[in-house]
Amino acid sequence: MMFRILAPVVLVACLMGCGGGTGDGFSGTRGPVTGKITCGGQPVPEGCKVVFQSKEGANYMSVGSTNAKGEYTLLYNAQSQIPGVAYIVTVTPPVKQETKGAMSPDQMANAGQAAATTTAAPLPFPERYTSAVGSKLEFTVKAGKTPLISICRPPDTIPGRCLSTHS
Image 1 (spheres, helix red, strand yellow):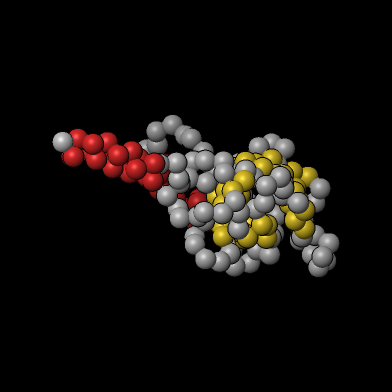
Image 2 (tube, rainbow, N blue to C red):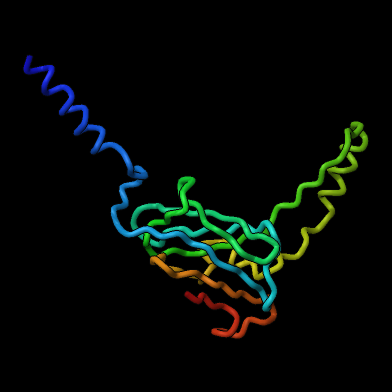
C-alpha cells in the first residue's frame, strides 16, 4: 500500500527535476542574439559563419550564418537562448561548392592539377577575424542587446577605427 502512494510522488519529483533545462549546467541569464556584420560599411557576404565562443569557464558555442544584408541569428543547442557570458566572435567566409556533372578519370586528374595551382579567392575581410586567437571581437550576451559588428579590409587597419562591436 505504501509503495502505491510513494511511487507517483517519486515519479513526479523526478520529472520536475529532470525537465526544462538545456543540460549544459548554465543557470544564469540567457538571451537571444541577432546582429549585423559589415566590412568597410558593406554587409559581409551571404553565408558567412558567425561563431560566438565563450572566453572563460565552460565551453559555450553559438553559431549562425549571415544573410545578404549581413544579418545573422545565433543558435545554441538548436535554441535561440544563448548563455549570458562573454564571448570571442569569429567570422569565416562562405564555402563555395561547385556542382559539376560526372567527370571522366582524365577530367578528375586535370581538375586536381588545376586545384593545386589555383590560388584561393581573397577573403572579404581580414583573416584575423576567422580565428578565436586572432579575433579581437568580443561581446557579452545580455538581454536586449544586439551586436552590430563592423570590420574593415586591409590596408584600413588603423587601430580603433576598423574594429568595433556595438551593443
